[in-house]
Image (cartoon, one colour):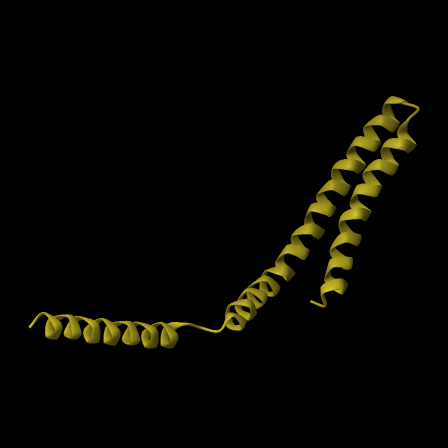
Length: 106
């Protein structure tokens, strides 16, 4: 009697294990689908990010122009250095956005 009960437990345990494996393999998805979806989402946000970088560059340029004008009007001698720094930051933002766009082929 004990052997019959143990055998039934073993058979039912094996059946449950096989069903669990079949269910897990049916639910599992390919990793490529997730990677492709992430790639698509990042590429869809990229154009907006580049436009944001251009807008930030324009704002930095305007602020820099005002700062340089104030220094120039007050007669400071380091106006060229300040102008180069502000202009360099604007150019950096525009170049970074363009290089990233061309590097990733977006």
